[in-house]
Image (cartoon, rainbow over all chains, first blue to last red; front, side, top):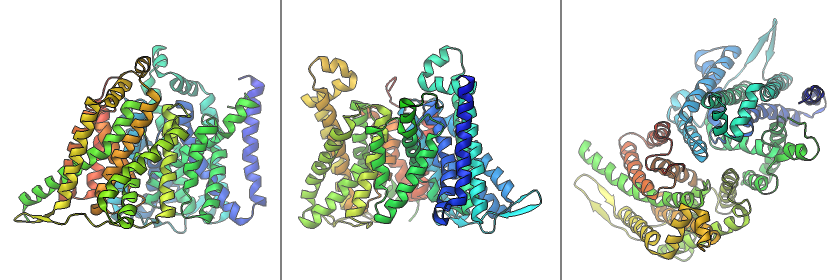
Length: 318
Length: 288
């Protein structure tokens, strides 16, 4: 990437963050809340994309990272009375630990085995949230009331829509710019090499196992960050978020937006969250759109929205 | 009851469960072996089998007819999915996984929209109890186990003695070489997919009188099939059978003595551990 291109790419990403920041002034309340949620979920998709799009590992168990962040944060606040900042940190630690364990277990698996093992482990995690329902409240979950953030002598209630939106935006911006930085860094290049040909990368002298582990942990960390943020902003923790649907969602968001593009996750999440919202008003079987979109994506749009734009008009998109 | 009878009940449940699980997972294993694809919609074929069995046995009034119709209907669904989607993407591994996840939701939600969110049972075709000194055991469950066992043997014979079986084994060993020897690989793929779906549909239909038909029952079937197929090694039918017994028995014992949820947690974790030590499963082929 040349210097000008690098500037252009950064400008584009900053412009998108600016547009999201500006949107809160014009959006009606319903869409204001939707976009706040979408930004947090898009951060989750960014974490997922790092593994699928840039490292070439398809996981079906990311819900356990999202839920690790969620429970790490929720349980420390609910049971130990921790503050928001400490709870958030606990969520991140839980995510990193979970991802490291999963990364180590799956280190040797190749191809479909990786997908199946992550799915199995996520299912064990999900069942564990049900089994230990005295601690986690299982299916019912629990609500965290009256969360607030103390910042520079001011106290912000997280239930306030404006605070919710801007905290979500801030975390999304960190994840977006962080992923942009990571994929254009030397480490990101090695991730790409792993995606293209793991054997050759090893022959070139790279410790592929270590980089693969790093990719899983970073992806898990970002997913857990999104889970922790979701808990704090939407004040609810429940085992639904550990279920398989929440492992399939980021896959769908990433594929629709474009795997291996930095902006794809946002586009896919935005598109799908609204499609699911509209469909759920029409039929109880609204998840059929999730299935239909997945089939559409593989049949007619394998590169996704942003991937298609990149292939046709803007080769410089990261 | 003391531990002894408890254990006997657990072993009985485990044997029945193991045989049904073997039949459920066999299709997944066959499809992976022959076509080299992971069919995430496999559990939905199981669920469809159960739902079709419910429809047929309530409208036609015969459970035996339902047992015959279920695999045919589900097989037809599988052929349609194969022609419309899988063949078009050339069975590319990752696209196929995504497409079958899509198929999973399409089938599941269509059943939700038509059949509804109910769990409905079918009366067992036969009613008798086998009385042990400590507890009575459902005779129908033993018939289920017998039927599953018979179908497993039948599949085994079909694979090792018929031309179609020969084609399937040839395609599994070397697709291109098989094609060079005039094996109609495309048709073998479609047949394998349909047979795999049909077998699991029979398993789904068989257990409706015991477990009820529900639109979400496919996920558990899928996960347990994955457990078994991975433990046994991807692509190894013998491994699948052995693993189904091991998992079925341990599932039965842990379910009866502790809790079904714990049994599922143990089974899924077991898979993770086996793969951590031995990347290709217990009986997996090299490079599978």
